[in-house]
Image (cartoon, rainbow, N blue to C red):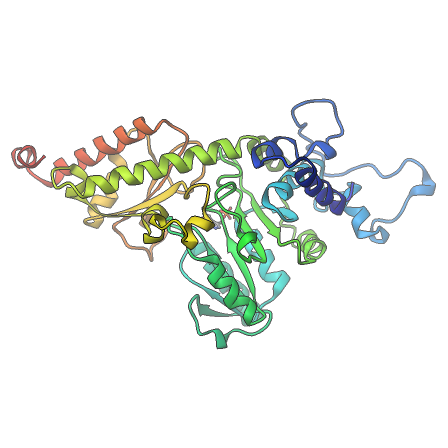
Length: 416
Ligand SMILES: Cc1ncc(COP(=O)(O)O)c(C=O)c1O
């Protein structure tokens, strides 16, 4: 089975059956399923037998690249679990998809593919800035601010937008940057890690390539490292990306591809619940801040999330159109001072103090632990699949415990 055939089948599956994303996440690999087992098998082999018939033997270097993609020979080229995982990803992301050993490996693959002279980029995940710095050592790649003057961009450059943004969970208007990039002949690449399907479809707003750290929501269980690129079907980038991946060696491992398939089946269930719970928690916290008698009012300065952006209240706004199925399951809180931010995680019973996000477990991170350039008063929350009432209870008791520490006991009970 070659990759283009898989791409075609995944697309046909969507069109002919008009199936929803939740259903495609369970069935879009049906055409690459060669066994009667209902659950996908785990193939750990790194190498695959050549044809038994000597007349059919073709040296690997002479294979038609499209055939080579389907006739497994060596795991750095293709493997059964990877191809199956990518068939479902292609269907649910709306463009041919490839997997990588990590999100940053996928970002690196974009830079190798497009080899831009300039990249316009804002804040967001600091690791992507690390990759840019490394690539600029080799190619002289120049970094421009996201809102640079359009005249600074040339054909072949990149505007790279992360939305929603790490760590605040606030969204950025994709169509605005798509228009700016395309006018200059540049590409728009999107890091959509914080807004996985079904929350947004960046191809609907002009994205040329969409990146996900699959380590987060696609994996969903905090147990696999993974990167994903999906290409706008109008571009013919797939075979080049695949060939680059073979030589960069940044391929997804067998075990991770298998875990990825296991996780995709429940992606829609998990993400819609995580999104709804996060948005409800943000609303609750925001309301607490308006009430001077609450613990939140004492210790929290501000809550950050797309649902609190002004455009969220406007029916016809770019934000409502871009995220029609809910906002991201990540939000941030700025505490009144850095010491409070450092101490809040230790007060919580259900939220675990750890970096990363997107798993079934709710996490909180004093962000200064992994990003020294960030506001020291900021904590990031990744909402898992626990019940809303339990997470609300945990935050409430944690904020109260923190509030008590900021005042002597008597004064505290007088104010709360
Ligand atoms: C927005 C964003 N993009 C990319 C990455 C990098 O992903 P990975 O850790 O899978 O390399 C991360 C990791 O946290 C991220 O948050």
